[in-house]
Length: 69
Image (cartoon, rainbow, N blue to C red; front, side, top):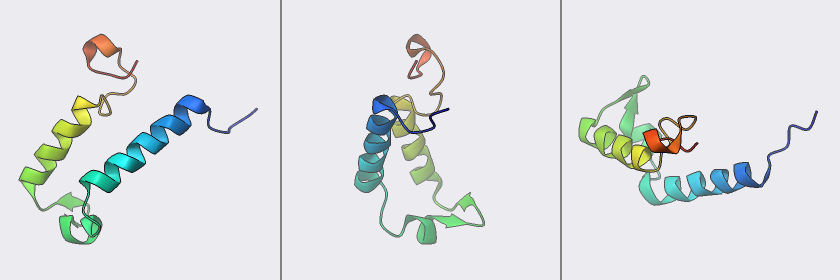
């Protein structure tokens, strides 16, 4: 069985990497999270919206329901 990432998976990986570089501050983990909880509720809401716009919150859902298909 071949477990290597295919073209679609590699493209998604690159898309997520670029998103993280553009949207997350370099010190995100240290300054935003405490004990696995968000400190900044507004940031959490903002990020959730951005992830939802890209269909990343429900990736396995069909596109017509906001997923990636």
